[in-house]
Image (tube, rainbow, N blue to C red; front, side, top):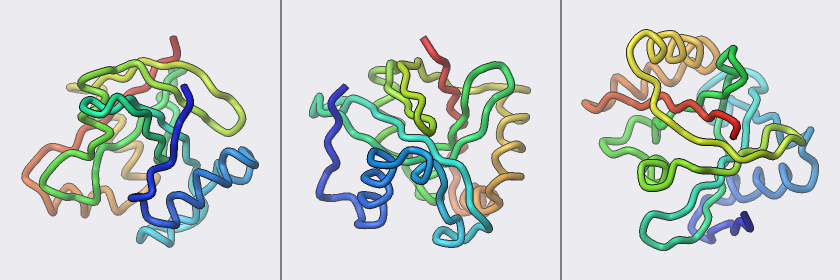
Length: 150
């Protein structure tokens, strides 16, 4: 995939993506205090294909390993009433590009459900506590997305 960084993204996100591309080991970490959390957290780059535009969109997301070779991310959009655009892109085309530090690979995205969702949600909340606040702000169930290497 040949990703583009949209001008519409906030500067700090554009800068994070640029750092990640230039120095994957440095970009792998994000200062969570910028978003209400604590410490340096690991991020991955997720590149989706726009469901309407067909253009590729790359965003940095906090992640945790699932324990079975995959990675999980949260489609929180800060607790907004609607899912983030990247999540709708996954529904339309679940095949994505993922970069975790210097490891880039193709993956397939799917929603975690049931016990798996509860376990991964708790894993993510334990890592980044503001997810609890985001869920409290919205009536929608925030999706837990699993990214599996293909």
